[in-house]
Image (tube, rainbow, N blue to C red; front, side, top):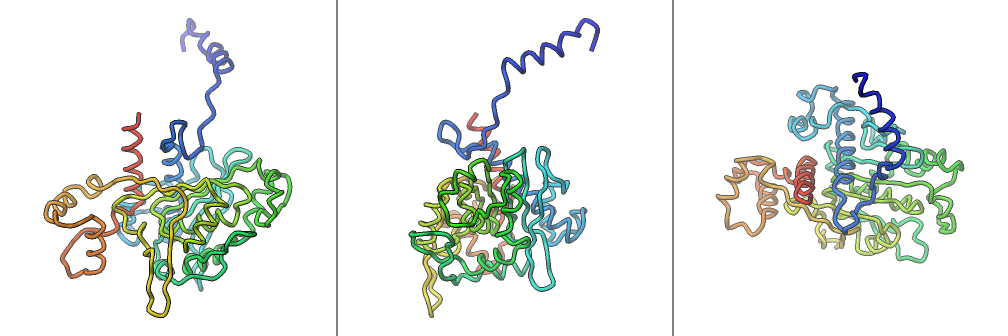
Length: 350
C-alpha cells in the first residue's frame, strides 16, 4: 500500500461498522421458498470429509491405494482430511462391529452454539449386509408420547446402536454451550425453551441419511434441521408420520436416477411377513446424469431408448450382471453426482 492509500484501512473499518455483512443463511429454504443451495453444498462437502476420514484412517492419505478403486474418483476430491475452515472438530463417530472400528461420522461445532452431526454412506461389506436387513424392529420411535410408535429398518437401527460414542451420550458435547448437562433425549417438551439456544444440524448421504434420521429423532427436543442426500426409506408409514411431527425441518434431496432412494420398496414381501416403508421429510428432486460418466452414459442412453426409466436400467444392471453392461449402476447415487446437480442448479438459479 502506498503512502497515498493510508485511508483505505480506516475507511474499510467504518464501512463494516455502518454496513455489517449479513448473517449467513443457514435455513434449508431460501426466502423465495427455493433450496438454499449454498448451505446445502456446504453440508454435502462436510459429508465428503467424513468419507475421506474413513478412507484415510483405513488406507492412508494416498487415494490411489483406497479400496474399492472407485473411491479415489468419488471421494478424493474432498481431500485433505482436515476439519473445514470455520469448524471445530468435536469428536469422530465410529461404527463398531466385532474387531472392526471405523469412522462413519463426525460431530462438528461452529461458533458458540451451532453443532453439526455428519454421516457418510455405505463403504464396507459389513455395512452393505446391514443395509439389506429389511426386516423392522418394534416400537422404535423413542419419546413419541401419545404419537403412534413406528418400526424402523432393522439394519439401520442395529448400526445406530453400535455407534461409539453412543448416541445417547452426544448431548454431553452440547452441554458446554447450554451450561447444563441436560439429557436432550428425555420426553419433556417443557424443556424445549432451555434447549433453544443450541442450533443442531444433521446431514448424511445414503446410509448416512438413515442414521441421520435416527439421530434427529433421538434429539428431536433440540428442534434439529435434517438434510439428507440419496437416503433410503428408514421405516414404516407410522414411523414416517411420527418423525415428520417431531422433526418438521427435514429436507430429503433425491437424484431422480438414484436407485437407492427407491429402497427398500414401499411394500416388501418376505413370504413369511410383509413390511411397508415410507420416506420422511419434504422431497426435493435433483437431476444428474450426462456429466457424471461422460460419453459412456450418452452411448448407453442412445442404445436403450426403449427403457421406461433410467432406474429400470440401473436395477436391470444390478440384477443381471451377465447383461454385459459396463457402467457403475450406482453412479447416480454417488456424492459427486449430487454435488454436480446442486452446483449446476445453483448457477442456474442466479
